[in-house]
Length: 264
Image (tube, rainbow, N blue to C red):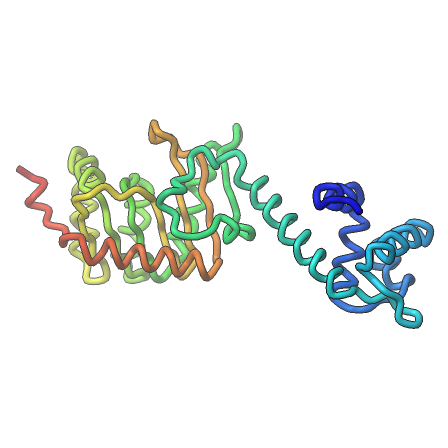
């Protein structure tokens, strides 16, 4: 009897094996139906089904093949593994910069996330992805250790035009950086003065840069030097629940923004 690693290798050596087992775990199928779904030849399918039968992963029921209970168990397990590896591949280039200690969810929840990284032709692609979302959102909430000029301008223009509500928790360091630039400071003050905006300041550092735009969560990923490495966005409900809970926690422990406290 082969060990579990050998069985994983057996499946991994052929994408057809994984696909056939997955299909049979979903519903019984004939060899013709399997051939249509996978594109595999009848000879290949014959070998696969024989191997699966020897392992008691499938059985024949008249003209159809049916996954057994253990076959379904293996199909679920290999499906989970494939999903994990697909997510890992998606995050591989940015995992060194992900603030994993501050992320209150399993990274597998990012399986359907979109990761946008800079390129030679689009170096600002991660930020632009978030700006596009901000420009189209009716409700915007954010908590961050920074507020860049473009994000501030987008929120200011949308809110003052009556097209968006804006709530944000910013770190003291983020406010200090804006206060050092007269033009940005006036824009921040104008945004905060709007009836549709409220900004609070957190004395403790905010370890993340997260924006929730109409329910979609956007995470800006920076390196230790503050250089933007990627944006990650997802509609996953668990990630959204985490982002909303974290926002509420920061909001409750932050103080209302008072411009005069930064103008000494």
